[in-house]
Length: 514
Image (cartoon, rainbow, N blue to C red; front, top):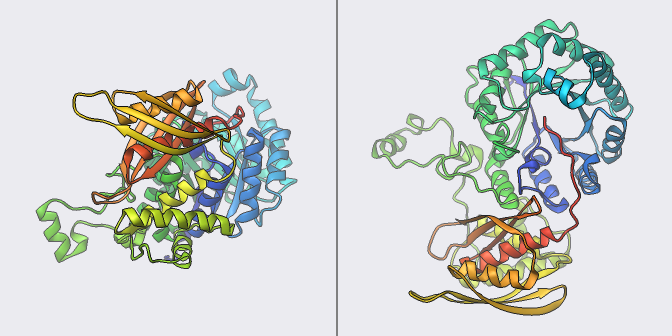
């Protein structure tokens, strides 16, 4: 890293990213992502919204207990109960931050809060003071700042700095701003607020117009020194600013930026793959930095240029962001220690010997089917292991399908349902449709299949397929994933994984937008 000013990277994948429909994560999955973010040297990890549900509270607390190198942050509305919950969840943290917010745009104050501007300022100041009782690291966000009156922003931000806020986060909540406009707003606030030197200015941009990264970078050029972002740009609606794009833009264009991050950028691609596999949101091939085609060259002219001098068509080195050959020399004769060691390198550690034994058994089964085992195969294997761990209502025992030209496909499925083995058959438009029909006849979930997606985990005709399904159950979107060298079996696994998540107690969450 250069000697430039530090640019703080605030990752909100576990909070704002999780608000993508179907992207909810359990506590174990959140911990895996938190460890990967810490390994990447992310400065601040926003672990969740503790007041939203007991599950969110416990997840934030678990991250606070586990992460030691990064600041762990909890979100809270400008309400005493929210701030108390955040303070309690963050108590075990080596370094904890409370991020409190209140809306400041005219439409939000009038229509949503039904509060006067004076009342909003008073509430914001009080919230910061409450938060300071739990930690010296307090962040304040004026929600919908992108549509707020600049004069009012100056007034409320000056007041919360005096109350003890150390970071001021300016959100473009609805992705409405353009880069030149948003950058100018940040520069104007820093210049006009008398005590602006006592706080770090931050930005949190949404991607509704595809401008989240552009707006964030414009803000940095105008004095912001923290960017809130997510892995793969995950987030509700069109998502948030993409961490990998912000970090690599600043790192690549040091001729323009007087700041840089402390991130270990070689961890970007592994972290991207982990988040994608856990959420079931595949990364588009042409996605900047982390897409599978990000460093691919098909044009003969480009290939010739890169072979002669990489910089002719590549502004970054693939290795610098974590792209590797992605191949490990392991097979059916490899032992537990080798598997455990490689998964540790990939950011996954087993908590019990039973977990290792289960993963090793799956690894041996996979080695019998595939000649070469790749890192992505191992990550998929671990996901299958964690999905099948614990008390599940449903578990796949076996699948049998019959599909031939001119005949209606048939499927027979055997499952464990609440500890009892049951079987059913069904026909369908195709083998997968028939399998899903047989499963539904056993579980009677009445969930609607909203998405079905198949991706090849690695190359080759013996590659594992990873299937993602999204079920709509009473308006709640739940994702499920499954992988296997047989797409039909992978499909059954993904559907059952989603059904197990649907069957978990669903708590209504009051997740806010920023």
